[in-house]
Image 1 (cartoon, rainbow, N blue to C red):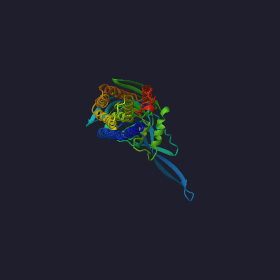
Image 2 (cartoon, helix red, strand yellow):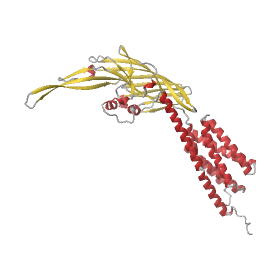
Image 3 (spheres, rainbow, N blue to C red):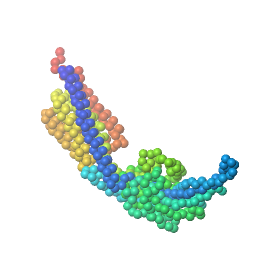
Image 4 (tube, rainbow, N blue to C red):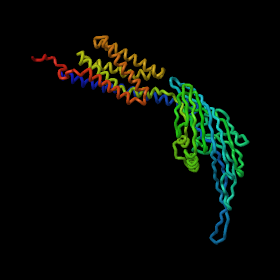
Length: 453
């Protein structure tokens, strides 16, 4: 009889390992649906506007440098020639203030959703232009200034909603598409006129209505940069090179402020280095934007596919604990349970995760979890009430499974404390099993021979 119990234990262990196959199929389905969701979001962003990062404004001052070079020929006669070099000086803002509000909107493609936003931004500040743009020509050099421009780098020009104009000094200039600095991505520019010889301070301001998806960021281009954003979206995710110095988040939305100094970011030096490189070593044109930007992500707080995948990771633990409870019933109540019945219950446990995935694509994750868990618990409880020849025993198993599902939901919604809660759950279950079986004589299990007096 002992050999029979040992053989059955091996068979049940093999069944548990076989149930890893349907669980792996469920995980593959979750990955496939998540990839489909990402593809739909990329498709919607491709037809509207992608992630947006603002870099600017920045003034470029191109000029020609003529240098008189005196040299002797092979006969010793002095000759004079003029060398012409095209160079560019760059002027970063002394102060930069960005203020704006962001409205969000959900776009759907079938059952999949993508979040897009519309930002109404006000950019203001001032440039400090030194005399002759800070360039001193030598006695044998002459400078010929070309048309300066003010540039604003953007990730995706398709997101520009308005026709922006910049107020620079006492003049107003209209922006035109494109800009010349590859490391700032796409963007806009405006040809301007500056009192280059005299220098001075140049206040600026312009409005920018920008549409994008998921991310809105910026580069702290000014020596002193301040950013203030507000939005009714209640689930922001702040990230990038620098986090906000102050933020308020509630169900009504968020309000956040950033403040950055060029002493902390070293941004002008890094950008100037990239401007002077012939080739920018990055995977996309927006490498400097992506690396140095700060901003906020607009994303849904609950990723159903991530939570479903996390729940599947506990699937084998579910099966193992349920089969262990079956084994305790067999031992304590001497009710034989066939391996086929073990297998049917295990398949029902595996189908829970598939139901959870399918329902969560149409309903909220919490309600989907409740519906999938309630269906599985009811089905298994009804089946076990007949297998164990007692409605009460079926109800006890229902309570046991409901406790397991409640514990799993607690692990899913409390990611920071998942390890602690999981360890306490396993310890509690082990303690219960030891208390229940503390008087079991394992050597006498299956021994039907009466003791000899």
